[in-house]
Length: 240
Image 1 (tube, rainbow, N blue to C red):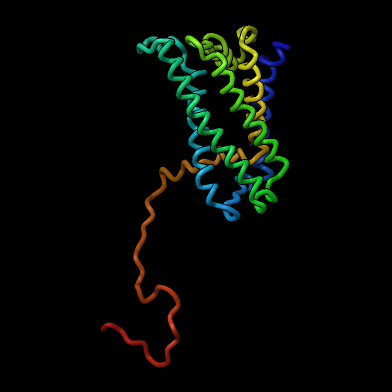
Image 2 (tube, rainbow, N blue to C red):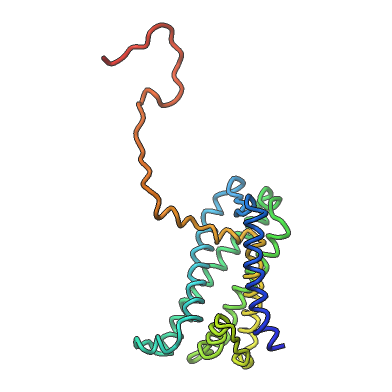
C-alpha cells in the first residue's frame, strides 16, 4: 500500500493531468473556460471570487515554498525552525480561512440563486467537494499538530515530493507521516488529477501575454459622433 500510494499514485496523477490537458486542448478547446455565471448574479460573486482566488494563490505559494525549499536553505539565511513553523501556521491558516470563506460563499451562491444553481453540473459538485476536502484536511492536519514546533513535514513529506521529480520516489519517508497529512496528500492528488476535466482548467489560461503586448492607443471621438443623431433635411452645417 505504501508503494501504491506514494510511489505509483503521484505518477498516475501526473499522467491524468497531462493527458487531460492535451485532450481538452485538442478536442474541447471551446469548452476550456470557467463557464462564468456572472450574468446570473454578480453581487455575491464580486466578494466570493476575489476571496477564493487570492486565498488559493497564497495557499499554493505556501505549498510550493514548503515542499521545494529545503530546510538547509532557510537555516542558511537565519530562519529558525520555530520561526518557520509560526509563519507557516499563522500564514497558512489565514490563507486557508480566506479560501474556505470564499468557496463557502461561492457554494452558497450556487445553491441559493436559482439561475446559478441550474447552471451547476454534477462535474462542478464533485469539483467543489474534492476542493473543500483538500483545503479543510490541510487546515485540520496543520492545526492538530500545531503545538510546539508542530510536525516537521520538511523532514519527510518535502523530501518525498522532491524525490518524485528525480523518478526515485522515497516512499519510506511517508511511512511515519501522521494520517491527517497522508489523507490531505491523497485528496490533493485527486484534486490535481481532476483539474483538466473541470472548470479548474482555466488556471492554465492565465493571460500572461497581456504583460508583453503593445500598448493599446485610445483616441477620443468627436462629440458629435457619440450616440444616434436625429435625421435632418438639407445640408449639414460645419464649423468652417
